[in-house]
Amino acid sequence: MPKSIVAALQIGALPGGKAQTLEQILSYENAIIEAGAALVVMPEALLGGYPKGEGFGTQLGYRLPEGREAFARYFANAIDVPGAETEALTALSARTGANLVIGVIERAGSTLHCTALYFDPQAGLVAKHRKLMPTGTERLIWGKGDGSTLPVIDSQVGRVGAVVCWENMMPLLRTAMYAKGVEVWCAPTVDEREMWQVSMRHIAHEGRCFVVSACQVQASPQALGLDIANWPADRPLIAGGSVIVGPMGDILAGPLRDSVGLLTAQIDTDDLVRARYDFDVVGHYARPDVFELSVDERAKPGVRFIA
Image 1 (cartoon, one colour):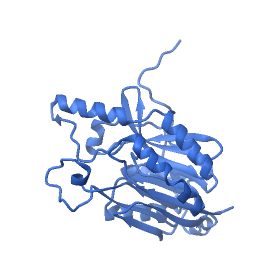
Image 2: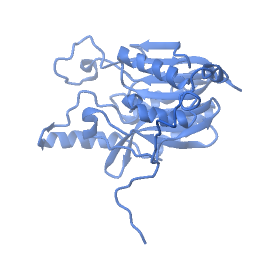
Image 3: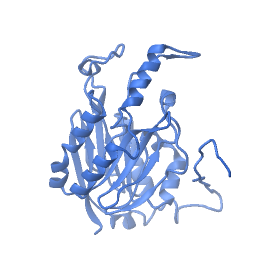
C-alpha cells in the first residue's frame, strides 16, 4: 500500500547511559503501536550519546590523561553491532511491526563510528550506515565510514535511506542516495537550528522524497550535571526540532521543540510520481553528458591479508 504512517521519535540519550536510554526507547512501544507507525526514525547517537561540550582533554599537539579517561567512559557506553542492544531493537521492531532507523555509537575494534542502523519487523537488523564525515571535533572521537555502508532498503513504507546530521549537506552523497531510488529520507541528527529545518525542506524538494528528521532533545547542561563554560542556565543542551516533510518541501508535522514525543504523519508514495513530473534530479532533469558521479562502494579496511 502506498499510504503509511511514518514517525520521528524525539528523545535524548539519558545520563544513566545506554541501558537507561534503551529502556526509554522500549517504553514507546505502545505509542508506536497506537500511532500505527510503519517507520520510526530516532536521533543521531541516541544509544551511546552525543557528548556535546566535551573536549576530551585535547589541545593542539597534546592530550591530557583525564581526556583519555573521558574517552574510555564514552567507549564503554558505545554498543556492539550486533549485540544485546540490537537484539532488543530487533524484538521491538517485531512487536510493533515498524521498521526502525536509529542513530548509535558503534564499536569497531578500538574505533567508534557514528552509525545509523536499519531494522525490519521480519528480518531484524538488515543494514547500517556509518557516517562518512564526522563534523569538526567529532573527528577526534569518531572514525570515518566508507562507501560500503550506503544502503537504501526496501521497506513497507517504500525505499528507505538514512543520512546522518551534516552529511545531509554533502551534495554528492545526496546525489548518490537519490540515484539509489530513496523515497523516504531518514535524517538522524542533533542539529536543532532553524537552518536545519531549511535543509530538510530543501532535500525533500530537491530529491522529491519524504523526509523524516529525528533530533535529540536534552535539558540544560546544569540539569544534566554537565559543566559547559558560559552556557545559559535556561537554555537546553539540545532543543529538538524533529520534522516530517513532504516531497514538495511542505512540512507535514513539526517541528517539535523542547519536549519528548512521537511525531507522526501519513505519507503516500504515489505522490512522488506527481512531484517528480517536472523535476527528477537523477532522471529527466540530469545532464549525464555534462556531469557524472562515480561512487566507490568497496570496503576500505586499511589492511588486507591476501592468501
